[in-house]
Image 1 (tube, rainbow, N blue to C red):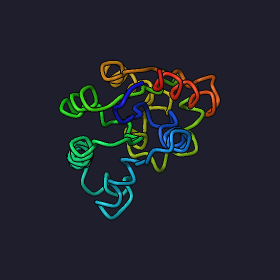
Image 2 (image 1 turned 180 degrees about the horizontal axis):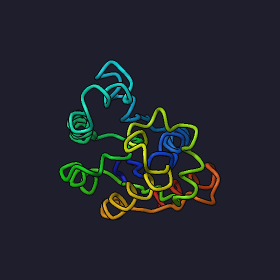
Image 3 (image 1 turned 135 degrees about the horizontal axis):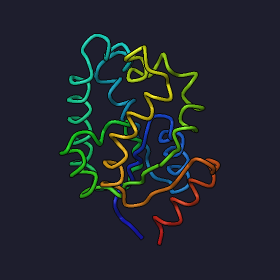
Image 4 (image 1 turned 120 degrees about the vertical axis):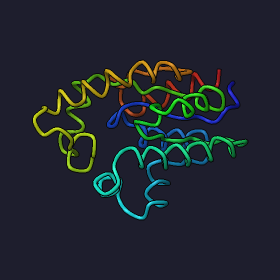
Length: 176
């Protein structure tokens, strides 16, 4: 059985927040959502912050908060990370060293299906209006997939599984 806290990583729309809450309940362990911590810190939505200050400034805040949590985590915790947390090399080092990281791998087709109604609230999907949603997700995933694999202690393909099946798979693997 792992004693490390659990960090869920994966693309936007992969189910990190939903799955983290359920695992938290199943294991009776506290849950935190990195995006919620960021919005508390910045005092506005991530969408508004991106428009005002850009992705680079957002990533700096995300890295600082993630690394603070990583340094302070000496007790059980389930963390839903932001989809881009793995972009920062130092964050990846923390994920590999301090967390039992679960990559919620999801097919591009399913991501498009899940995200098509959320485009307005997802800053990276609002960029480059000439690309289709499918192209944007493909491009982001192409860059991030190897980074998710790099940090993953465990991989679950969520594409054809229910939330309950994903949670059961993660909990079973964590407890072995």
